Image (cartoon, rainbow over all chains, first blue to last red):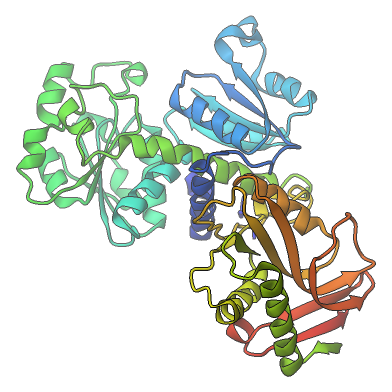
Length: 309
Length: 177
């Protein structure tokens, strides 16, 4: 019993059994995290390097906590104050870190596909902590895990993803993950932020946010990724908030209570209002809490692959 | 293959172990029972049922402990998905009876004690096993209560079948090649 993959690069490469196994393991780690002693010695012989070529608060902290609570040794690397600025290549950087006897690499990179490229050149297991506009697998896993915790099995459930679908790796990983779990997915947002052929992934498109909310059980609201938009795709943030922002009066006008999620960081007053983000319907902080358990599960399940090579 | 205990013998052994527990712990007011996942639970379920009957204590505290995260061989064997740990009471200052089906190298019990101590500081920890494969220990671990002692070599394997899970009660010794 272990995952069908050596690396966690994307949800696309996982099968349903892998996802179920990660959830079952995360359930147990969540119980460990609720104990007075929140630590187990499982990976005391393992060293993990967190290599972040792009900024992160939640994901990096969450990975670091997960690694420490598994008893692993952790080294952190941020590209901004490293030799990358002196012109060192990705492979050289990573090989130098691995030469110091590191067993596993957690990497975030602004280039889509960077972890796949790296996986072809190094032996250590790689966990993708977000690559460009492609995938962010642990976020999708913790999102689905949090949904399941709130509304039960996801088969047949309706999930709406709202916002910058085009530039969001969270959106793509969520779509793959929810499809494998048998949920129905609709994406919503301005037409300029929804990729043209998104329907080929088996999702529906609804440009009217209110209609999309009425349809769903859970709404995952995403941030507008201004740093990845190199030309204007909507006129102003105010206009975006007006037409695509989720606010309390909109939620109140829907007959049922839907669950509200957001992967963070939140731009309050743009894609989501404070009266929604801080409401009882929101499980935003549960997502953060579950993130540590999910990452512990992924790291643990991949750790066994080392000696089999 | 050789039968170590048949259904009738197994029942007598379980009765004896339960009586020994009650003899030492009487009312079980300061004693809790913890079974080790996954196969130790099948034994501890039976023992707890019998002890409740003999001691008359229906409130006997009983928990389940999974040791997957505490193993010392995580990297060298196929990774295992954990079972539930459920200890819904404090073990602080209590007598704890750990229960597992077969005692072999002693490594599982070492891991179980590490896991247990993360839940608190018990006054005393005892070990009950159904089958003790003596002479095959890799760590200095000995049982306080043993159902059946057997001399084995490493290539042999002791398997305990339970009616609840396997459809029959039996303990067998297999020679693996």
